[in-house]
Length: 193
Image 1 (cartoon, one colour):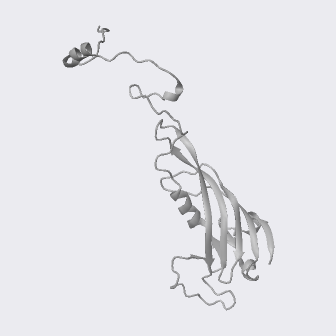
Image 2 (tube, one colour):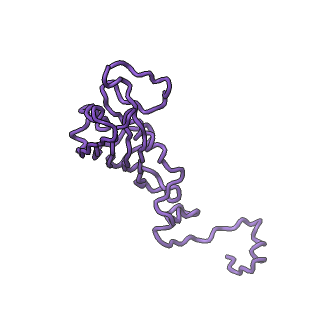
Image 3 (cartoon, rainbow, N blue to C red):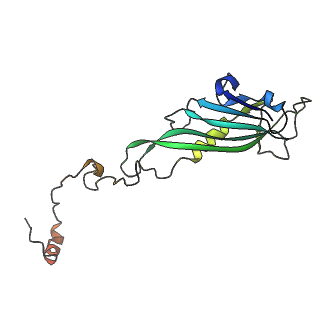
């Protein structure tokens, strides 16, 4: 069993920081592994903005069929608090636990029949592991339905629209509809103008 720890810069394709050349690992016996530190710039989305780089650790383990990809990556996305409408950075954690199978036979160079497992994560024709789609899907699946800036966010005042967290604020008494004025006397309120 071989253990090698490499920085992502030493082990990635020059084309993309989420593509890793795994040719050397595929040539080693089952059980061999590589630990990789990932640092990648934010991905581009249509309706989503990443506010931090993608960082984390991966372990690539050689199996008898391909590679086991296990690791945790972190980033953050811009969200709007569903109560007070402030912009917030929402932390995102992407847990990867996938088996990456080859698309080209390592020894013969012949294409592998992928019809048995069409949805499996596949290595590229150049024996590279491309994790961009998995990371992109993980970020999209982590997007919250109703994000909060904090658990006890009080939201906005229904009268003036100010943030309730900004402190107390007073409102003048609203004029009561004249048709409902007689109801005030039932409540015992003698503060009629």
